[in-house]
Length: 109
Length: 113
Image 1: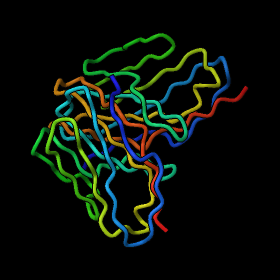
Image 2: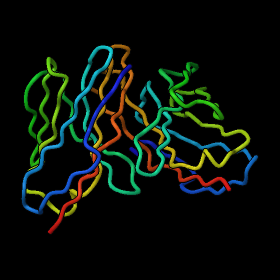
Image 3: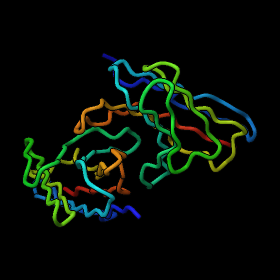
């Protein structure tokens, strides 16, 4: 079967750095997305990785290792507004999106 | 561009009633999706479409139907609503390129009582 694992919940302090991990076992791989979802709102696109390595976008970076079936989202200089759920999604060999259950990130002052 | 537009935003249905959730996108995207999201849970795919006239079941299609007569519109029909269908419904679309991200509508919050 296809599976994506993310921690259910993480807590971090304002101004700090947090890394949210995502491991996947899918039938094939054609890319990985990270989305942010604030409570009561729709998911919004953060990043896309298809090749190994780090993609940086301002305070957010996303890393991919295809050989390990592993990705992480790195959030720097945390702000209270970063409190949200972070969803990992993989495109499989049939170009279907497989979603993780999401990681709820709680930021404390 | 409006992106992905969903209506209504909220709806309360009685058990056994039917309704259609509307979804329209103005980005000329081929791929469109309907997801449901229960509180504290991830997204579950109900139906999807790869283009006008083509629809396919996702992982939780029972109790729902869809149609895709145009590229822009992808309505979701609930027949004989049940309390188990209480959820937040998201419509999304994406382009055909491999790295094209999903664009989500704002969601429809449905309660069946």
